[in-house]
Image (cartoon, rainbow, N blue to C red; front, side):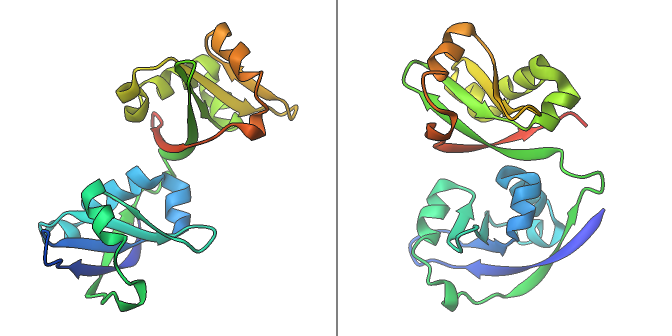
Length: 192
């Protein structure tokens, strides 16, 4: 396991339960995905001993503050003045050595009643199209929506490839890949 130190603030709102705000790096989010980073943080000893809900805090590529955790807590955190946050202590977070078993991917829900999930060609090379499609089908975001799925990836030939039902692929091909409205980011857990 590799370990890194992260700042933690105890936030005590007047109108809500206290919670922990843990600052993480964008690189951690990119490596593991928001959901996985949140799980690593929430399971860390210095966090569990506080017995409070946890909210992640990081800056995206554009320098915008981002939060991840319970939606009600996120709503409260949006009102925080970032330069007034008092960081109470540092927490050591352990990361898996073997590299990310989780990764973040863009997803779009189409009004025709299906969703498309962008995956990496490396994932397809490792698990095959059908294997990746099956793994994506079992991701919580996808299962919650109970919609058919198409996976999309840029092949070594620089052509976008699709895998799923033909009718959905035909509908997708009517939209340029770069024009797809990726409205969601999902975390996929890969078999270890």
